[in-house]
Length: 118
Ligand SMILES: [Zn+2]
Image 1 (cartoon, rainbow, N blue to C red):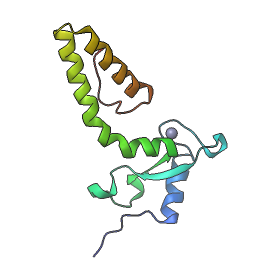
Image 2: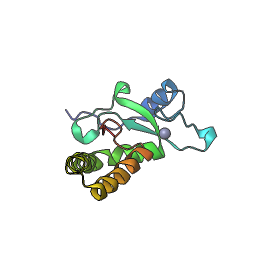
Image 3: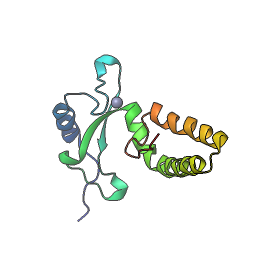
Image 4: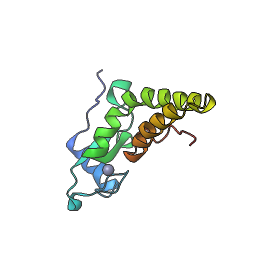
């Protein structure tokens, strides 16, 4: 039996209602002009199923960020390592460069779960 991975319209309605018709990250709603999406918390390609428990409401911006999160994780980790190395080597130019890159990650709230000790 093929297990369903896409939410039905009824499931989407229940998830949106449960989340108060707001993005679970920033709280944006349609009244603020946000376009709301029902997202799979565990992605479909990782085996995430169409269950209400696996759904969350995201605005289009956070939906986009989430989809690109994985691709940027490696980059952030790499810059953190380079930053640590530049501190050890007292390479101020490299350190400043890494700081700007890592600050950009923070400014866009990308990969917040990966922390860099400033
Ligand atoms: Zn949002």
